[in-house]
Image (cartoon, rainbow, N blue to C red; front, side, top):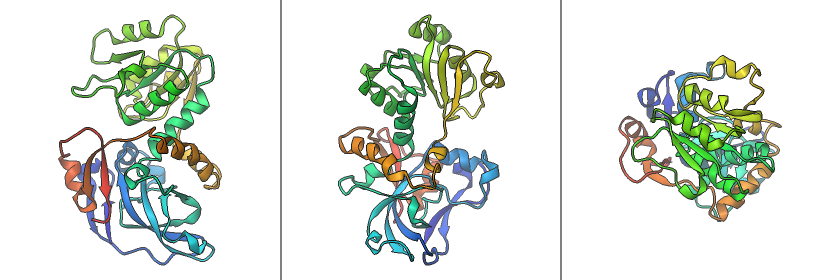
Length: 326
C-alpha cells in the first residue's frame, strides 16, 4: 500500500515522501483495519512532524490525525457488523496511508448522511471549538477574544459563540486576501500589522478586560492578549501557530487571570475512547444541520501530497482534502 512517511523531524514539505510500504497485518483481538478514504492537513500534523513533541514521537512516522475510512477487516471480539462501516479512526496519527490498523474502540461511527468530505473534517477543529466554548463560556460573560480569527477554528468559534449570544473580538495578522468568514459575527476585528493594534484591542474590550480569550498563536501576540485578560478571566491557550511560546510570566498567576492549557488529545484519551460516541454526537448534529462546515480548497491524491506541500495549488480558499486511494 501507499503511505506518506516522514523519516525524520523537520518541515513537513521537506521531510515527507510517499512510498510503498507493507500492508498492515491481520487485525488482532479488538482490532480493525480501516481502508482510508480521505484526510487533511492540520497544524497539529506540521507541529508533530517538526519534532516539537519529541518525547512521544518516533521516526519514521506516518502523519495524519484526522480522516475518514471504512472498516475493511475485524479481529476477534469485534462485531462482524462493523465491517463496511464508515468511521473516524482516532487516538493516533497514521491517517496518511491507504490502510490503518487500530483498536476498534478508537473508531467513531460516521452517520450515513454525512459525506466523506464533511466527515473528514469532523474531528480536530469542530470538536476543539465545541468543547472549549461549552467548558469556558459561562452565562453572563461579555468580552471574548479569539486570535487567528480567519482560521477554520476561528470561524467555528465565532459560529458557536453567536449561537450562545456572544459577539467576540477577533485578532488577525492582516494577511492580504484573508478575512473573517462572516463579519456580522464579530464585534471588531483587530489587525496586528497596525502600529496601534494593542490600543485598538484595549478599546474594543473596554476597561473590564477580556473575560475569555481563545489563543492558538502564542508568542508576542498571545502575551499581549493575555495582559488584557481580566483578573477573574480565563486565557485558553490551545495552539502555537507562531511557533514561539508564551513568555514565562503568563504562567506565574501574578496577573490573577487563569491560564488554561487546552489539549484535545487529553479530551480524547480521557477514558481510553469509551466516551467518544457521546463526545461526537453534538458535532455530528451540527454538521448535519449545516454548521461547523469546512470548505475544501484543493483535492489531491496521496501520491500528489508531497508536491502539493512544496508548491500548494492556488484556487479557492479552503483546506486540502487528501484522497487516499489514489
